[in-house]
Image (cartoon, rainbow, N blue to C red; front, side):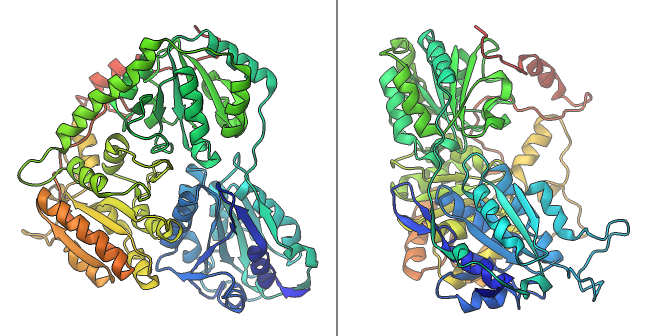
Length: 616
């Protein structure tokens, strides 16, 4: 079949199918987000136009924003579908590097197709080309190498025959999932080749479920049988495996308390008696208390990052650690007894190796008792008070008015701690996306666009601060123009409040975070009218100043978003210094002359560097 390289790539994208968790067949690549320029408009752009009825193309307004939308789409579909983003060469391509970092850190699939400079070099230096004096082969797209799971530059059309299977391998492999970058020189996009018909035959990609090593299972079962106070930690791998029900049944069978990581939030119904709460710095005192007393931790589908482990101070030094992960890279961390395999398949196999053993009943009962104490604390934080609302109060309103199929998300600043620590899951499926692997400001709005395209069974609500809104708000117009509804709750606390808390809480002087501490030549500097900004970007807008108004305004925003098929933005002033605290330590570099150094020196000795699987 004689096609241009671009036509062949598009035909291949259309032929790839995926199987969802519930067994439905859907397109693996359901959407292309594109901004066209001289590096991709005639090659890839023409090929997409020719097949526009088979693969939709959505117009973005920043390359970073549309690639983040593609990441949000992948997360909302539990990695069963992959968003594609394409750009011209030069600055358009480099704008997507941040989104690649988000996908890489969060182990989410993303296909990036940046344009590239001419392979012939005849017109060099072409517009937007960056020339390297000592390396003629380097282009700006080499910046993607550090944040790509797989990278290739297509310098001949026939390279696609060998590289496309490798690209889809990475995008669909639970152990390697992450961004794939295929740099497309604009002259090669237009070149033709006789491609084999078989390249374009439909293929259905199903979730791989590698089985664990039998000896590892036997070792894990032996360790569990001698445990009195085991703790089950559920991470994002449980979500992507579709193993939530399986893991919870395992916990019920053996009486093991359960805690969740950031990526594993909303896997467990809030009122479940084994739910001890979310773990870590942005988690709950209930989960952290249980973790501090556990004698064995079974961590499923998590890389145990620093916010989850309180910089590795949340577990006792003599705890035994067992990890279940599809990626050996993650499984072997901290000397764990590593079991490499799919979460669902591995838990089923571990059940077969474990006789009717149960944890200490008093320990089992402590899960709900500890969580009840944390719930009472959250209730106090959410309680109605006059004046400017807090983050916790706003989160409480959104939580109360959300249904079991609604989807909530955030990424940066103080809001992750409020959602992770304070949200109460009501449904039976994961319904939260807290991008806290890269904590990318701006993901809250761009990612919400992608999530709204994918999550059609309920309404998406994204929660963010004024800083994130100003960082990247252009995709509000993209979503409004395209007709994808969601609610954005913008909490204005007059600056980068959570970093100001870190700065001043460690003894630093206030500088450059709150607007009051930023340099300006104006005696009375201007303020942002967020409502006017969102309205100008095509959104429905509501505002609120106190808690009663927040409840009424959020209900109205939900109605407007659904009825008008566009984003509805709720703008509310919030307190800048009231937070949900889990009481855990987080390691940051504190200079010796700051007052926070004392606390640092006290906490550092509690940090566990290497647990060792045979520790008792």
